[in-house]
Amino acid sequence: MNMNRVPRPRRIVPFFAAFLRAAFLFSMVLVPLASTDSAAEGSAAEPTLTDSEKAAGWKLLFDGVTTTGWRGLGMEGFPSVWVVQDGCLRCLGGYKGANDLVTVDEYENFEISFEWLIPKLKGNSGVKYRVQEQEGKGYAFGCEYQCMNDPEAFDIHASGALYDVFAPQGKKLVPPPEFNQSRIIVRGNHVEHWLNGIKVVDAEFGSAAMNQALATSHFRNSDWGKKPRGHIILQDHHSEVSFRNIKIRVLPAPAADQ
Image (cartoon, rainbow, N blue to C red):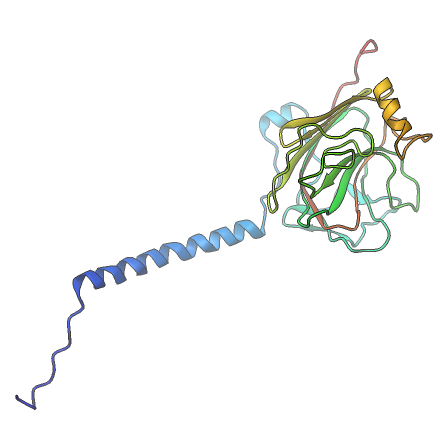
């Protein structure tokens, strides 16, 4: 054996070399995709209105960036428990007392559309309407569209219910971190609650069914819902909740014979 001969380096098997090149190219594609997904999860596009929505009278009730159009219930300022984050009005939860958000304007005949997310099981919030504001009181009294992370509940306190009055029919929630889609329609004495494309409540203020339900509710012998014009509020029920894509349109008053 020639001891002075330098060993020749072994050649990489062609298949293995091809595998390494493929792995490198795959990693170059995967990293940008992962970065894009992370950005999408951490932020949300600002809400917009389509031309057809504008033509139908829809307006943004929340622009996704500022608190314009909203303030603390019973106060002039904006409560610290609420923040604008990732295109959402987000309640941080955990604060003592109540700090509901209220619309600056009042509404009587309207349709409101919104999306909401409650990350923790049994987390509680809601959207109330026909609210009569009282100075210094941060907890609203009014008709409530219940919002909860309660996939197994179907009673008068379940998501989509007209709280403590009518249970939701056909309720289906989407799991976090997806947002549920909701609508409230109020026109004259008629009210509808919609949840993820399903009408879950259809009721009439002043009807025999409504009066019978109210007689056994927390709202018996009160002025609940009797004044048709009022504020809309987002409820602080000490739970974390996010609202986004909040849109509203004013509806014509029903004819006298309706």
